[in-house]
Length: 193
Image (cartoon, rainbow, N blue to C red; front, side, top):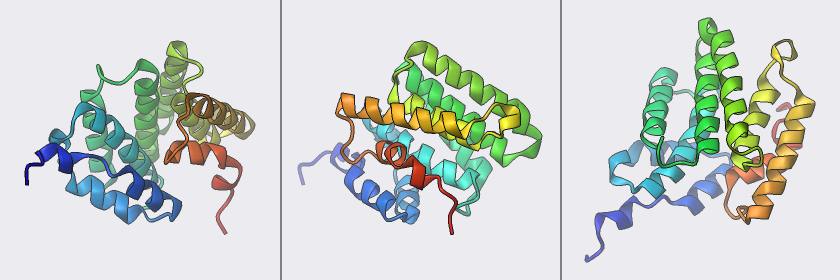
């Protein structure tokens, strides 16, 4: 009874990570929908945005039925509020992801947003070329960008390998879905049967 509201606002990372392993994104959706952004500390918002990024990626890719535009807009608003909290490389990587989401959601925005996403990745690397999250986002973008527009699946796998190395060097491997995705990229991004 003496627990403050912050006790209930903490991000349930273990439950969300287990849901990712089981590919049960309904748990992520329930968490995102039931959590009041403003009730989270900045540190918890930084964790929340990462799960929101993962969920919105699946929505933008039509793997989950949801309101794309609303989800992308909410993600963008949340991200902008973390502009001065997040380190520059991850912030720019998230901006790249936002552009990629918009490119997937609208055929009219495909080329301009795709190019903008690539610029944000380059900007992320200008801040820190060893940032594992920026490398992970770069890998995802390279994987899904057609070769005609500069994408390369070979380079994507290199980015994932580098990301895995830097996650491990930083000791950021426990219950980290980005690390697991990068580590298992050869099977995670294999065509689904």
